[in-house]
Image (cartoon, rainbow, N blue to C red; front, side, top):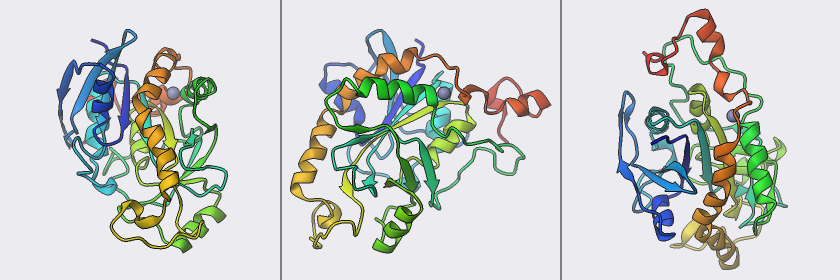
Length: 288
Ligand SMILES: [Zn+2]
């Protein structure tokens, strides 16, 4: 079995694929030098084997963003042979044109988070990696091409501002992020993407907007419901449509993403260290 592509997604994402009739070929957590990974489910569809990992838990929101073990999850995926990652994420919108229920393929990141650890290479001289392009350009182009034929409104660019969480942002923070050029704000892509790049993985994110960020719209505080009233029932209904269609959308993207050649820089991000002899060909030996 060759698992070259993985989908990192929302709570219980594997169940969305099972609901479409797909059966998990393997489902297990993997021990890594950085702790145990989240459970990884392997499915097969359209002659493509792919892995599915839920960041926040299998049966509910069990681990909030700053406590997701991104290093273990990415190490485990790489150990399975994964070369490409589709990261599904649910940010808020800073950009007025990005409405709840819209899809965005981000092209850049503004890291305002204090999440850690942000590297595999603690107490080592490795990891001085250029971050432009940030997301895999080949996978981004392929995803955008597929979305053009799909049912969802989407944006082919966007700057994702990363925060720590689990709390939501203050109105002043949101004003600041907008001034800085941010389009989306969320807690999940960092440090995940930076760690993926250290492992020379191609990484593309597909964001679906779940709410307008704090302070953009007049929204009274409502205790006891999701986001405490930050999103209206009508907006949440739009979001629900995308969430319901998640697995189908992912499967529509899968063949294109799986077959995209890796002419991108992603597979060579550590090449300087390899040439210098600082690291060997076996990536498992790179870490202290
Ligand atoms: Zn790439």
